[in-house]
Image 1 (cartoon, helix red, strand yellow):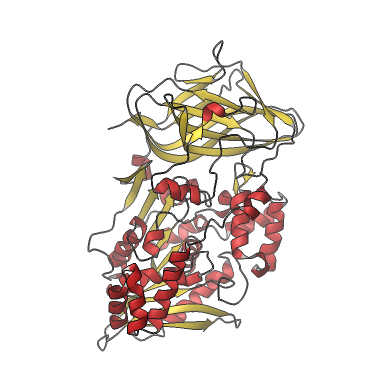
Image 2 (cartoon, one colour):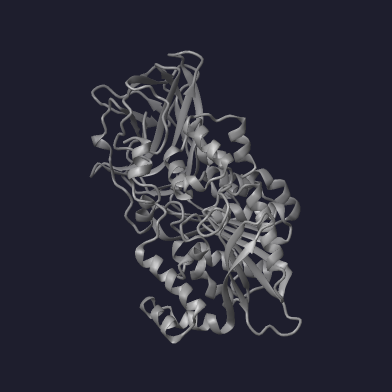
Length: 565
C-alpha cells in the first residue's frame, strides 16, 4: 500500500463516533435552550441532571470574536451566574482540537469547569471548523489571536486577570503551549496529546512521517490552509526539508520556548501515549525534562488522543482529571476532586490499563540500559541472536527493498490501532510469517523471569544501500514462543543519505521510549525491514539494503531492561 492509498482510502482516524457527535450536538442545543425537552433529550446518555445543574450555575452562549484583521473566530462562553459584587473567578481558555466540530469537541467538559467556579472560553482557531480565515498550524498568527481572545475574555465582569489558564487537546495543546510562551497572563497550561517539536514529529531520523502528515492535511482541509502552509505541504511531499521548512516548524515548536517557560515558571502539564503516531514522544519527554518550573508528564497506553477522549466527552479520564487538579492548584478553582496534582512522571505500562506508576522525574523513571549485541544466525537457523556476551562482528544480512510491507508495521491504522490497544486488544503480529528475504530478525533467549522494559532505547547498525539513499525500519517485539504471536513494544525508522551508491554508513539512533512488562519465557525480537506504510521510504525498488556489523562498529541494541519488582 502506498502512502497515498493509506491517506486517501482509510477511514478518518480522528473521527468521533456517530453517537458521540450526536451527544455533543444535543449538549449544545440544551445549553443554548435549557428547556425540559432539550435537557430531557440528554437522558439517553445519562447527562440530563448534569446539564440541568450547568444551566443553573452558569450562563452559556455561542459568540463570534473579531480579530484585528477582521477574521471572525467561532467560540462558546460559559460564565458563572450570581457572582457577588467584587467577587472574581478563574478562567480557562480552550483552543480547539483538530476535528470538524472545533471547540464544540470540549462541550463535555463544561459542567466540571462550571461546578469548579470557572469562566470558560472555548474557540476554534482561524480556518478551523466554523471560524473564518486560513489554517496557520499554531503559527504566530494563531498565537496573536490567543492574546486578542484573552483581551476579550477579560472584558467580562468578574474574570480575574491573574487566574487565566489554557487547556487544549492535540492541536489545542500545541496552541495552548505556544500561546503561554507569548502571553504571561496565562498562568498555567494543560495540554493532552501535546507536541514538543514539530519537525521531530514530521521528520524522524531523516524519514518523513508521511501517513500521519497526510492525515493531518486532510483534516485541516488543504483548501483552507494559508499560502505559506500550502507551500510547506508541497515541500514535505516532495522531500524538500530545507531551511524554510525547518523555520516553519521551529516557531511552532514549544521546545523552542523552554527558556521563556522557565523564566516565567509556567506550570505545564503534558500528556502523550507510548504508541503515539502523530507527534514525537521523545520531543515531549525532552521538553518535560528541560522545564524547571512546576511540571507533570503522563504517558499512557495507546495512541494520539485515546487517553483523554472519554474525559472530553464528559466521562472520566486520567488526562482530564489531572487537568482539573492542575488548574485548581494553580488558579484556585474547584473543578477537580480536591486532591493535589501529581508532579513528575505518571505512567501506565503495556498492557495494564489499571497500572499507575509515579516517579519524581524522567531520570528516576528510566531504567539503566543493557546492551544486547546483534549476532549472525547459528548454523541451521534463519534468525540472528540478541545476546549480552560480547560484540559480534563480521556478519551481513541482505534485505530486499520491494516497496511492500512485511507483517511488521508501526500500526495497521493511525490512532484506531492504539484505541483498540487501549481497550485491551493490541494488534497481534505473526513474526514467524515474515519473509526473511524482506526482513532480518534477532531474538533473545527465553526470559528466565518476568522483566520490564522502561525508558529509552538505542540501536546501532551499519547500513549499505545499493542506491545513494536507503531507509530501514526497526521494531522491537515481545514474542511468545508457544504461539508464535508477538506484540509491538517500540519502533523507529532511519534514512541514510550517502555521497555515492553502495557506501556503508554506521548509524546510531533512538527508538521510541516504552514501558512494557514481559512474561517469563517470552523473547525479545528485533526486526529490521525496509518499508512501512507509515513512513516515506527512500529505497529504490527493487534494490537491496545490507545490514552489517564491522569490526570496531559492531551492531547493538541498548534496552532499558530490569526485573519486575
